[in-house]
Length: 119
Image (cartoon, rainbow, N blue to C red; front, side, top):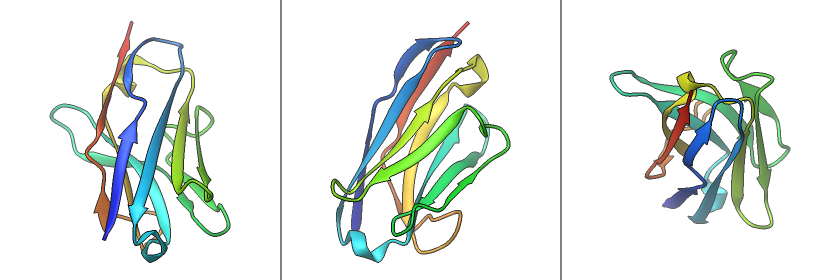
C-alpha cells in the first residue's frame, strides 16, 4: 500500500500562486507515477498533470499547461504542484494519486485539499 497526504491548499486571490505537496509513504516503489487531479462541485475528477518517479517525465492537461508545474523530490518521496496565475475556475478539491499507469496513475489516492480562488 501507498499512503498519500496532500497539503498546501487554501484561499488565494485571482492571479496568485499556491504550491501543493503530496507526501508518499509505504510501498512507494510500487508506484510508477504520480499525478494531480481536481474536482469542482458538480463536476468530474480531471487529471491535470503527471510525473514519473524515476526520470521525471511529465504530462499536462491543456487547461493548466503553462500555468502549473509538477515536480517531485525522490529523496523526500514528495510530489509538488506549483500553481501560478490562478483563476476562479481553478477552485476545486485537488487530489494527488499514484500508481502504475501513465499518465493517469490512480491506484492510490490522497484525501484531497481545497483550493479556493477569489475574484
